[in-house]
Picture: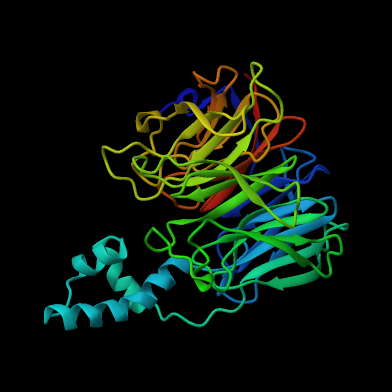
Length: 422
């Protein structure tokens, strides 16, 4: 594929072969901060004041391989990083495998085949031998860490707040509160826990929010299997939190009273949509006189013939969710589409105008214009060539600063600074 086909209206300014990242954010002070996917790499702070030559300012390395800290947020000079069990899904499946094998043998009078075990665990049969080799260990490190980064070259740990289970996934924060997605004792799947971080050395829990059915310790009964209905994360805008709740779709949560979050809007497009909801957020201003929100699903193991993960566009002017349109990328639009996870994953977590910058795994960066919400259109793209011996790019996250500088991070290896010239 030609260079023109790999990019349109987007130009690369700088590149680093960084270890794979789960999240990238700008701090508003000339830095980009990356949370890494795999230990021993934790968090890297980069000086991007010269976009053609990004440089590493500081690195936080992890002490062992039990956790990863692949998400990061900053408010002023306070940074929060998650602490979550590394390879958590594989370890939990491995923990279920022995009990499943014993149950199958007792029920059927014979050992289960790898295909039968795989169907029960919802994995591919070739994954079973690898799961047998995993030895799950007790995990008590889950939570989040709060850092003082007034000196970007020397992050200083202020607090380490433990939560429960896997620990913390993606989250939001401002100068007063942290909106944490985490497992907690007595609940099934991640819920929202809001912490007061006005004293960052002593975070204090303020409130919780969960889907009806998650609080099993209180006698609630889930109507779904496993952890398919759970909070991915919630983003604050004004007095609302906009929550993606995986296979339960989207929710709007009123936090006018921060001690009593309450659900005031909901929409679920599962089924028939096969991929789970990752993020939802409105644009900050009106578009065509309406309040418009965007949701994105996350591509997982794709079933041929089913739609890839994509964007949803909603009218939320009246408070609830009214679907207007969807935006898709064809797997013919990337030479790497069949060489790795392809569909959508994430967009920048602040929509300041009518452009949505989307991380599309092996589809790279997609710039989507939602000025006509009924007909969203692509106005730019950038598909990085894979580095580090990987078969395809895996563009995992994106952020855009106030001057239009774009940062994308690859899930496996690579960091790029770009500019949209459309």
